Image 1 (cartoon, rainbow, N blue to C red):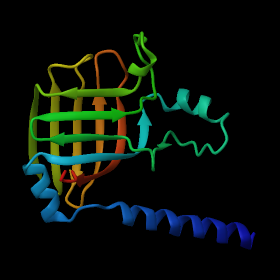
Image 2 (cartoon, rainbow, N blue to C red):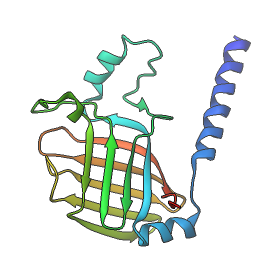
Image 3 (cartoon, one colour):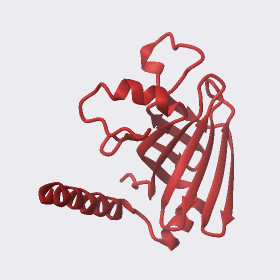
Length: 176
């Protein structure tokens, strides 16, 4: 009994430390990179719309944590917003209404240079709406960012169920 409690407490402390370490921005930096359209949203977890169906599949795999959330830490899944382009590289879990011909087309992967971008300051952060006009399935992204850089991203397309990603934003590294 004592060992289980100690394990749970250790896990909780480790999880909290990981969350604190991943906050990449302060209020001023967050405001600056959103205004300059120079940031990357790093996905740390995915929450599919049909969590029950996904959990039925994942429950048969080793290391499953369940609860409808899929851990993406350390996976390099992100959405980059850099000036006049958006580059998305995200996994997709859920129901697709049309199968891709090329299996490399699975997930949510696109580069767009023709899109609408609306960033609105809210009481405790920003709400950003992005609608692409030059990509397959015309993805729509709704990004809610807190002042300290944590956020959630909802991606909707014409041929897939919506999916939500949790994560954080960071400034895009400058190329030398």
